[in-house]
Image (cartoon, rainbow, N blue to C red):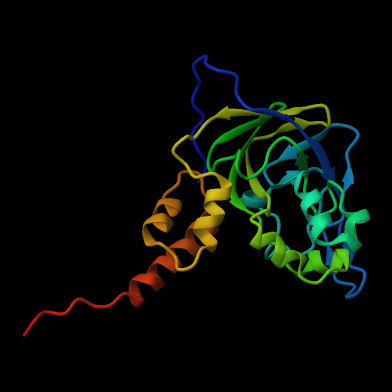
Length: 239
């Protein structure tokens, strides 16, 4: 759920990073012909950022993409170098924007961003609320089977922002930490908690209770916790 924005006292310089902006319309994938919003182009001028994302940006399957809690996808540019080494045949295509993200930066990754904190981009305020869940469309877009699974295995998924305050954003803007959440897990920690087996109930409980986490993701964590509780051995009373 959205977090109340509180005024912050003066203090040490907060993290800030250059970003590139991307948007695009849905286009058919090369093999299946299925429509996908993975194809993005770099923006050269400012556009409005609303509660469901950048003006002019499209998602093809609204059942699993888009919406207020997947309004803006950010993908760290440094991950493309890792992907190019793992999938050299696709290296020429692996450029910022090509995995369907709206924001890209070479200065931030999942270790630097915490669930529920607030970032400023121009006049807009953004809140990281969940990681991306890569799907088969990445494999087809790059012609490389196993790329989506590799992205999950390496915990290089990127993440989604919800938009707390709308406004015009442009390619000259920098993204800056506005309201830290030092007690919250980083996106990297959240990914480890979610994907590590066997699952640890205490860690999952902490993740589910993190302020600002996406509602749908919290529900999935609660479902897993319920399943784990049901599997736990029942206490028996000695006869």
